Image (tube, rainbow, N blue to C red; front, side):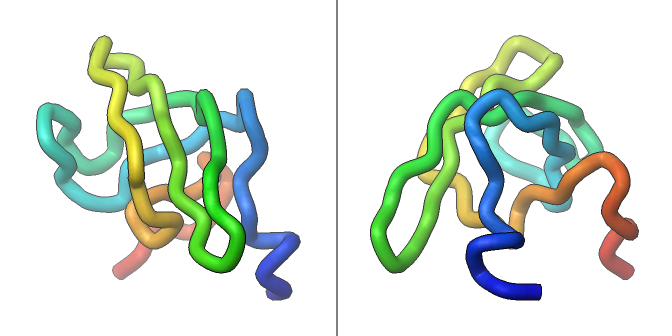
Length: 69
């Protein structure tokens, strides 16, 4: 998959793939903002009320994507 196709967009629904501060793995959320030029990070509002910034793409997946094993 190309880098452009793998980027998440604003308002896109996501799921945490790893435990993050205050956010257990598997928690759904929505992208608030994407930042970066060569390395993209995301600000996400999770359904448990926690908002986090500077999240790497590897810690997020789309709801329809396979669960990393």
